[in-house]
Image 1 (cartoon, helix red, strand yellow):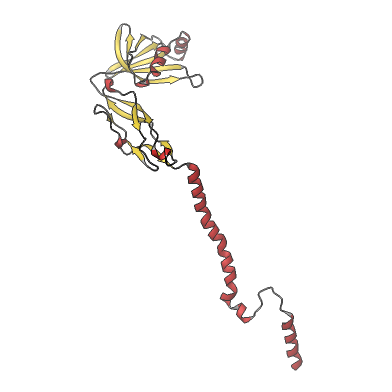
Image 2 (cartoon, helix red, strand yellow):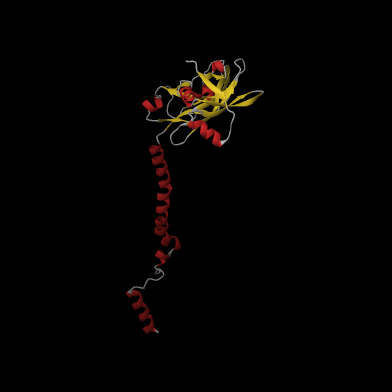
Amino acid sequence: MPEFVVPAERRAETGKNANRRLRVAGKIPGVLYAAGKPSVPVAVSPREITAILRSASGENTLFDLDLGGSRRKVILKEFQKEPVRGQLLHADFYEVALDKPIQVKVHVEYTGVPVGVKVQGGLVDFVTRELDVECLPADIPEKITVDVSHLELGKHLRVSDLKLSEKITVLTEPEIVIVHIVTPRAEVAAEAAATEAAPEAAAAAEPEVIKKGKPVAEGEAAEGKPEKGEKPERGEKKEKGEKKERK
């Protein structure tokens, strides 16, 4: 791992106008923090900070901040970028003690092709991409590598399944899922549509069954009574006329 030394100078002026003038001069404002010490406004070169962010360990890089000939072992606490061009606007630093553990976020990187993807046609769902860990500054890992090649369809890995160095304490909850092998969404949507369509088809067929069984249930077909709104047949009219002549 390359060692970085970032020259810094104290800022006498603060505020938006002063920061704007500082950026025009090719520097960015920042603040140096330390436990039990007052914060120090500083100015640094954005190129130096960009080189650190692009290194293998990124924002978890441990480096020296050279403040007027006095070197402080620091780590990036926060930084701000211009949203459109991505230029650095501000950087804060935190001075660390090499014999005291600190808490940082470490990126999770996945290796291997899961069995559930290669053989069973599933997809990898990356649920957690960063973990909170605690360790000594010199033991901060560049990344946490997780092998997912053994995962089958429907299986997952949790934080509790990780095997890390004894020097690193994972602070993220053990039950948090890191990666999951899931069924493709198109198939899930098709199954859901088929499940929803089945009750609707049964409901659509139900009125037809009731309609067919109605005359028998009421006994109207057996008695020969006409349905409501139906006209009696000609034979019925003739029979009524014959009864009238007998009277």
